[in-house]
Length: 289
Image (cartoon, rainbow, N blue to C red; front, side, top):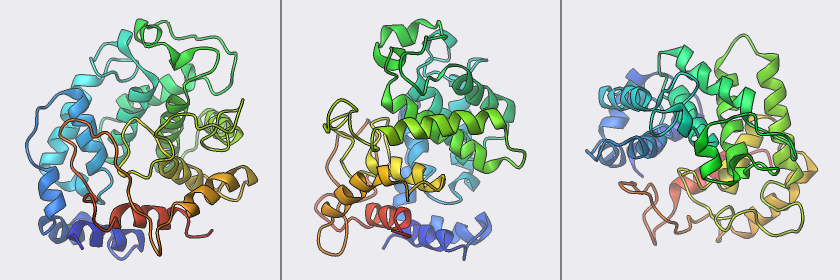
């Protein structure tokens, strides 16, 4: 077992609670060393690598991770939120949310920038059908489905993940954030987590794949974690996806599926080997079920 996975288990059990306690595990982790390897520092590559690093507890204490985190913020912040180009005209719901989430998880210190990403979600992310698109940036219009009469499901999931993560870190809870989060979670549950409302077909072809960490192509593991974090796993509309997940179990554990890997992606679970990370993630999510 890789040392970073040992660290993850101990962090989940609250037996390690600081970077100082975690540092020896990080230093002895081959996975963490691979994640610290150099790559082309574009906004999308930084987002992918930092998304992976954010799944390893206390990685934000590492100086290289801090440097990459700050660089991502610097090149994507655009005064009203975050976009891959750093221009507000190019904001897309999914990437604004993903960048906001990863900056929160990695403890980015410039809070007002994070709040702008959250405010964009509160103001412009639709969580119901047939609502007007109040965001006039050209990027969303260019890429089509983000804000049509049926809002992009991936955008809703990623945006609710950002709100949920932000809410979990705040002592003073915002009623507006809570209301938007509740609306988005209900939208997800109305789709039974992964199904089209018009049929029992999957919303995307990748949504039932068991992969970890999560790219912009969300899947049922990520969505169930969001639902768990908001105490909704016992909602009957989650029953279908729970059954599907247990059908995917292979013997005593779950196995990661193959998927399209972004450039410079680092595998947590090696192909054709025991999938320790995805198995732990599912067990942590479903521990009360």
